[in-house]
Image (cartoon, rainbow, N blue to C red; front, side):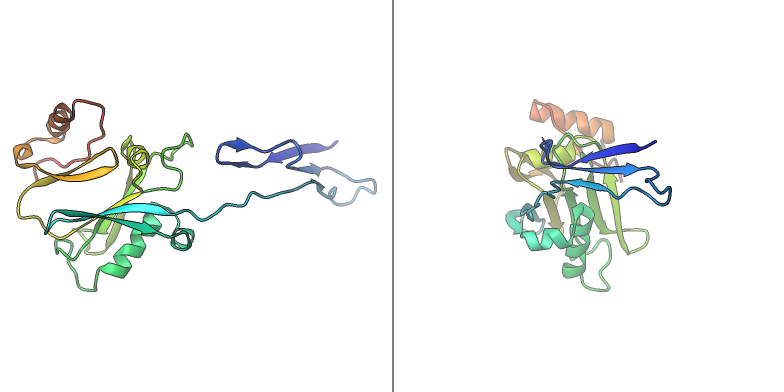
Amino acid sequence: RTLRISYHSWYRNEPSTSQEKTSICLGAPADGVGLVEPQKENIRMPEIEPYTLKILRVDLDTKEVTEEFIDGETTAKWVGGTGLAMKYLWDEVPAGVKWSDPENRLTFFTGPLAGTRVCGSGTFSVTTLGACTEMCGTAQANGFFGAFMRLNGIDGIIVQGASDKWVRLHIQDGELHVLDAEHLLGLDTWETEEAVKEETEGRCSVYRIGPA
């Protein structure tokens, strides 16, 4: 008996044609020794071009937001949100910097598949020097935030500096604004989300902290 397995290549949600497949047959050949040699039918691997990313850098000292672009060579080497975040912390945060220093970086990065229907692609990565260890720490979160970032044309956010007042970051129509957040002081996480959603008058994803 022979087990026939067909593999079809998929890329960017486009199924391959019937000619683009590899069939592997597992079973006993005529002499009863070994496996049947794989049958290859017009194998063609898709060419995946390196992609360019757009990130926003927020300077809390000046409240300025600037655009930066990450070239394809960099994205091919540092894959995914955590990989890119590690690169920025390595390049920009000197040795000896504490977690609360303005020289530290707080990064939010999506992954290559953010905003698609691929299972698990909605997560995003938050990376910084941690308060407990003073070492690099990263965490992933679910929800709509990662997808909403990508749908706004933003692949990552880098926060640096220190603000002289409480602020929040608001993203809408592909633009990031630094807004006042003094009125949110003392609210817990649920109350903060409700207050922000009331201000935006629409569907949004809110990431916040409670009283600290």
